[in-house]
Length: 428
Image (cartoon, rainbow, N blue to C red; front, side, top):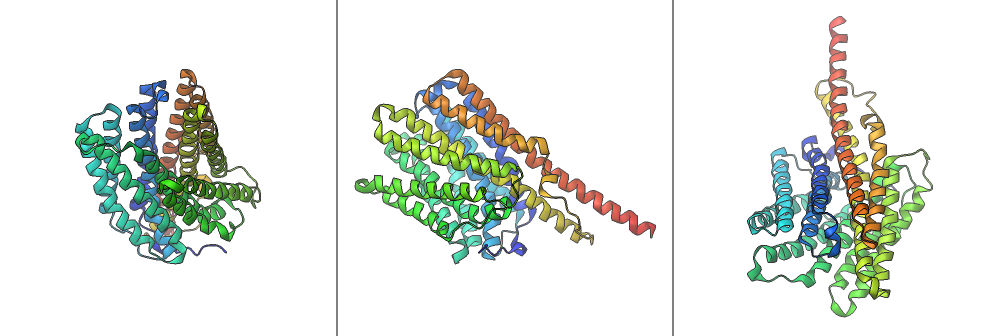
């Protein structure tokens, strides 16, 4: 049974679209910093340049996109009122985006003068965004999985802010043993359940697959429960295994559903999600192998992190944006035509709003980058790392240009439609 969607609850275009238009370029900034630092970041997971760039990517690209999407999809699923004040959304974007850049650059250069305002802005931004997102999601059954994912992100963010405070104020102490559980909550307890919850709705709708099996609705809660168990030292391994298993099952379900698509034609979103699910499975295998082969533990953990963060999380966000951006542009265009008393007929299809060649290049660019970065993690090689970062940066740039092109094409179509009807009315 497909989820019931309430499109009358869609937020104004100025709420979500700006998040999605800015996020790819924040990801590009993170890639640029890694290129500037060079392959030295592969030497240690604690290298300041790696930690800084990674936080710009995860907060500035992944979390920034998620923040915008949840303000939109929550009310559509729950039928609750969406955020209407575009000034509030603009303040959220400024605080979260600026906080991510300051925190990342502060960690990159180990500069307290940047860390302190970065932590402050992120704390303010998250404490403002979370209640707004929860209010739009509600606690009803259709959005329960989203609420679980949001709670996981909140727990991960609290742990992360505490670690950031340790960097900004050394006198508070830096509990490095929290790092793994912080990363786990953000990835397996927050982003993965969110992809599962949103994917259960958008994959059948946008990728023309059969409805996902009913048991997939339990997977976000399973991953969340696993991370709760992972916080208990004596049974931590069981918790990690449960959260990883939930993600692995979801990945297999999506891959199987994609083989049964009604339209077998090529689609960049389908390709990106296929790559993301394969990366999730490979990342889980790498992390599991790290427990069996201690002599390879460092490299296998590196490989798993690359596959799960850049491959799974990054690929999923790329894929969602290629559908959500043109979808929002069409809705905005429809409202604009209605406001001008013009018929909203023959609206451009999703693919007509996207630059065809550029949008189709994103999946191979991103996929190649993840493969090369995985190789660089296993066998540290300067040239492989630089090639991977170049491809990843190109994919981010292509995604940003594609999103902006969709908005501009929608605006152009709307202006032409209004002008054409004005001419027809004047001639009659």
